[in-house]
Length: 329
Image (cartoon, rainbow, N blue to C red):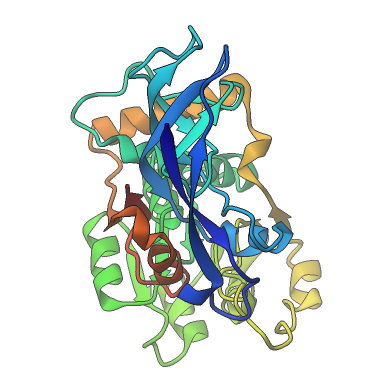
């Protein structure tokens, strides 16, 4: 018999999550039925969306999320023992699947790249950057792009894809270490929004003529300032709003309606799961190719040990990660 360890939601979050909001449980898994596989987690992801989605859980439910897993026992010919898959199994060390929601990693995945990238640069965050920038913003060479949370899992890829497409890129982050990483990897301007005297003035100096595209990962007061810097007909891809996810006070006022109207701005929220099928596979192959060729650099913030899942999640929400936050089981 296999015993699975799982992190569950002990009580709903108020403000920032704390360790006491989670409970580690162990359950005995049943024998496999025909068509099923037993998965063992290799890498697990923590992502900002989990802070919002946890509201839909009942207390006692397992936390949601993807993992890179290995098939350790199989009664499903499509997924023989040893197959590496992406699985939406949640925060658990072992799980049973009928194969329906499993996705094999790309067949051309090179041995030189860590499989954890399937949860990051060549996975959901990379796809979010790809489609948000290329489809929602529709960037073209010569345009100016602003990226908030630019050293995060999504933002760091947004900026590098924008450079590949011939754009000028301005990125903001919350530490000097993150700013240095952005400058090292091709951002034309990188700003520490926590230390600049005036965010409005700093953004204006970085791009005096304004921004064609703003890739918004943070929302809140930051985005209200950023929107004032947009060019006429500017496009804004609203990916996330991590600055307000843990607020216990009322949300700040939204952006100025006058600016949106008279600059004729296009604001669109999006969720990456809209893109499926061949367009998604093409995007994954593009991302893998760019990473393999060194055109996109990645950084992973790896936490060792499944027992540290809550700590990794809490650290992510407090901005402790540079690049993609990953837990190695």
